[in-house]
Amino acid sequence: MVDRSSPFAEPVNDSRAGITVSAAPRGSLWQVACWPETFTSVEAALTAACGCEPPPPGHMVRTADGRLLVRVEPLKWWIMGPDGAECPLMPGADQGAWLDMSHDQAALTVEGADAAELLKRLVSIDLREGRFPNLSFTTTEMHHMITRVLRDDADGPRYQIMVMRSYADFLHEAVEHHLAQFGMPA
Image (cartoon, rainbow, N blue to C red):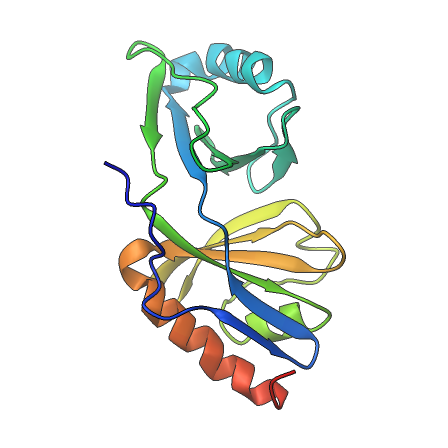
């Protein structure tokens, strides 16, 4: 059974000069992978199932129904959607594999004019617009944790930082520590 409770011990909601940090909404997270020899057929099936062309590695696209389709590795995609959403493509064993990872990740949303300024203190990636534009994705490390960073701008710069669920509180602590450098709470 998937654990839908918050992975964070304490509520996450803080706002400081130009930055807001909150727990990202829990939702569904599906991983679809293919074998090297089935890449073309699985990618075509993913196109049909999601109603859009799959993105190249390091990028995301919005599907026809509003989900995010993320290319996380050369032969692997993540499909992120609302809580309880089904995986749109479940390849057979001869084509690849699919996995429900909805319980696996903890995520914080960091948004606002200074969001990249905060994150550059935590991750070793270039977050400038020309290098990490809207709908970009990468895997990096933060304090020895495998960390995924997604950029999905809405009304300004917005990033989602994802780590394994067991590291949720450490992620929250690290972000709060660096957020304190941005002044008094709003």
